[in-house]
Image 1 (cartoon, rainbow, N blue to C red):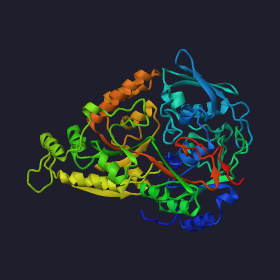
Image 2 (image 1 turned 90 degrees about the horizontal axis):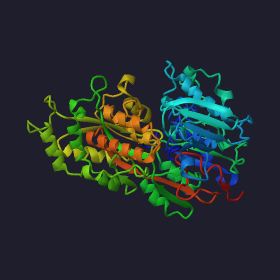
Image 3 (image 1 turned 135 degrees about the vertical axis):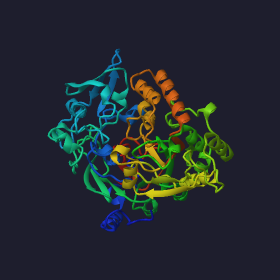
Image 4 (image 1 turned 90 degrees about the vertical axis):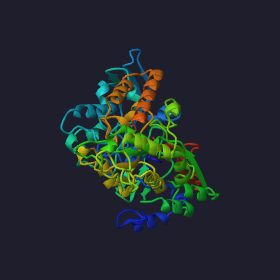
Length: 553
């Protein structure tokens, strides 16, 4: 699961001094004997508080339901907190039918009132010093909401200020009012960790969390379709995927995301099934376009002509073939192929890989090697020597270091030496933060983003207001497209606006999209059945852990 998954040689087998003991203890038991599903993950959950983190989606989405969520819109056999939903003729009034008789994992009724509380809790924080705008359960998009009301225990009504699909496209997690009603906004965004055991409506409930080591979940006895038949689930955190592949081979792990070489090796094992699937991840090269505080080493980074020229020196196909061993699709624009209704290959404006053309465009834009030392100068006469930062972030699949090496090599060939700084997750996130939050100061960034295929999320990479705008790019016309797409329900019009915005950001080039990696995963087939087929583990929900069965149970 790429979010459970959706994150260096081993510093320890797991993070923390007790890690080897944890792993050995887990390995001594068999999933076939105790019916506990064991998962290997490189994610790095840091808190079980959905209002304060983006790094814990995996365990949280097993515990809490989205009102609708991505899975419910893609798959007829999956649902979230709402059983059904509809929008009125006015395009503003959304009605959600909540499951009748649903309970929280502590046995208390789970109703429309809890859903209304979750949304109104966020709405009530807006504009206040402690606004809940830093975690997955955040206020982004809620400026479009006029009201949220529980009509009765099974009916929730959301009224929007204008037409928008946000009420079904958001992936906020519904939390129990009786747990959260007395938590202040200041505590919710900082000190309140929401320590286990959690109280949720999902099939598996977080019962224990040891940061950097593991998350242990137990079946929810009140889950609406019946208590899951597996005995629980343990997600083991690793700093690399090597022990995941080893654990799959030995049988001490049942599932894990793997690298391309591991995938090829594990595909030969008769006890293991491997799979690959499109997902929402975009791997990109970002330019630090900031001026003033947090700016990079040269004003050239702020010049669209410089960035466009660099685009001709990047070969996405070579990155796919050589860094991903074919398990990715070449990057083009900000819309990924899995968003089929919005994707375009931008044919008539698409760049091609041509180092000579990159050089010609740099010359034309005023970035020449005037002193013959093999290094181009910027318009201020300073040598262009750029720092590229990268690293493994929680919640996304790892970018092979070979991709970074290819980029550095190509730029070196066109007279722009690059120094690569590889950072651990926390340090990378700190550098990627907005300059007002202490981030910036780098030149180039190779990183990934993973949000949904909603129009808003497709464009958020370029939004001046979005925290995931890693290039710090600001463009009023792009923001206007995003505002428009946020305020319409009509699919065709939405597609047109997304395409126009995608073309604008491609031309301005604050990002060069490198690839759309495929999810590579593997699971053992000897202990459990019901893994699913193409979607062995959902990227957006808890499938199949609500319905898996032990083979010998």
